[in-house]
Picture: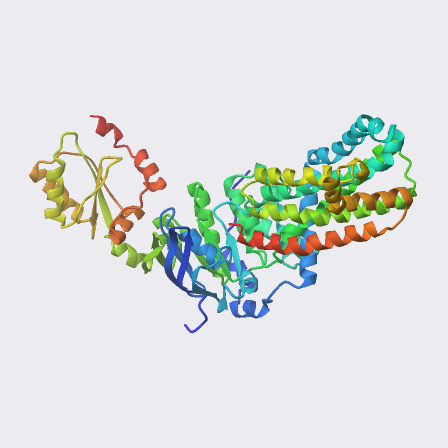
Amino acid sequence: MSTAFAPAPAGTVPSHFIDPAAAVARTRPRATIADTLSQTLFMAWRTLKKMRRNPEQFFDVALQPLLFTAMFAYVFGGAISGNVQKYLPLMIPGIVAQTVLTTCMATGVQLREDLDKGVFDRFKSLPIARIAPLAGPMTADLVRYLIAGGLTFVMGVIIGYRPGGGALGVLGAIALSIFTGWSLAWIFTWFGTIAKNARSVQGLSMMILFPLTFLSNAFVPVGTLPTGLADFVKINPVSHLVSATRDLANNAVISSEVGWTLLAGLVVIAVFAPLSVRGYRRHM
Amino acid sequence: MTATPAIHAVGLVKTFGQLRAVDGVDLDVRQGEIFGVLGPNGAGKTTTLKMLATLLPIDAGQARVFGVDVAREPHRVRQLLGVTGQYASVDEELTAAENLWLFGRLQGLRSTAARAIATRLLAEFALEDAADMPLSQFSGGMRRRLDLAVSLITRPPLIFLDEPTTGLDPRTRGQMWDTIRGLVAEGCTVLLTTQYLDEADQLADRIAVIDRGRKVAEGTPDELKTSVGNSTLQLRLAPGADEELARQTVRRVAGAEPVMAPESGQMNVPLDNADAAADVLIGFRQAGVPIASVSVAKPTLDEVFLAITGHGTGQAGDQDAAERAATADIPLEVK
């Protein structure tokens, strides 16, 4: 390929001669809400394009629910609920919560890797809302939560789970998990903006994720736990998500647990979205 | 001219821990000029540029771009400038056309307009054939061009170019220079950093020399070069020649202090005009100092630096080193 390129040839250029005074007059003091939304969507488009080009990054999202659902059902089913069939309504919502949380972690790790790329310098120099480069990839990640949540229920149904809440209940449960996943992802996005490298984001996230998922009612009934632990399990937001998901999927009931879960999600966004933007601004 | 300066910066400071990377730099860039910021690696050129481009917070001092305060109204400033960095800041996982489209849309263009501008810029930078190619197949020069094209989507009145030709082959470098001149013909103002005196000389209307975070000189390329001497006599003494005698001879005949380049065993003598070279050579013959090779060259950045700051750039400018290695006087040295 030729590397010759045409310098804008002398005669043809001043089709629009640049007028700095006019350019200054055209500037706007800040990005409007509408700008922010559209910029976030274009950033999401960028991430989706990349996802389509590297489908292997969906392996973990797809594999984990399949593997964990089968494994947990057959290993713990007999011990905890007497048999696998009885365990499934208890466990499937737990796996959904766990999978969604793991997906959140991937959001933070990938953001950290992305931040080191030259293109982020460009994003910073552009007159766009500072939150757009962070919110864009997270919005694209809604696809991952959908795959993760959906596949868990599909796998459950394959091994004999019959959700009492019917299709609507299950859809409600998936929608709630997606919202919760998206809101919790802001915590890991914040880690992504302040951590030294992707590995430390991963390490930090694991240390938070494991206690949160296992010290919850995700896989065992709370009644079987010692008192101190049971108290923590009751206030753990993951327990609320799991209970809410059970209520929706098994009984099609919009319980107070659903309300608590939504509230927890909103609180997390209100705290960690501004922190993330601040971390991103300071980065470099 | 009474027009608002493109850049007006006073006392810019940036510290990283103990290091004052930029230590009180003033800059005034007029509308429509190419202003060169010249200095060695680590002098604070890129840091200065990043502060002006809102990419780094300004620790002390003040900067205005077309009258708009950089610290107070960064969002406005970002609408007035395009930044092309030392390392291509485009998305490696998108194609050239997708990059141009994305950055157009992010800056508020409608889809059809973004596509039209992308097509025009791809043509202008001879990237049409590569429009849908993955960037991993791009050469360094193609990346740079795409990077510059992305900066030009909204036709901002001010363009920052951070070492735009570092790492490019001479032909591509010449083409990049033509492109930069074309920008100014359109009414753009260009702030350019470079390590190459040659590049600043070719392109810049005015140059600021930055060293260790401070501005040590400013002027037109001619003013700068005259302050160093117009040419340099480069000598390589024959093996066994008396180096001290050679130094004394240079001092006596040319009235200048010779500069030794230890890595090449070369002696450089700054001269006001090339004619004085003959006097130095006659002086050597009379004093009985044998010479292996002789050439007369324009001053290098290293010499400008030595003259202005009293110390070298701390690096053999890679271009000069390559030129020296390529000269045919190496066999003579062996004799």
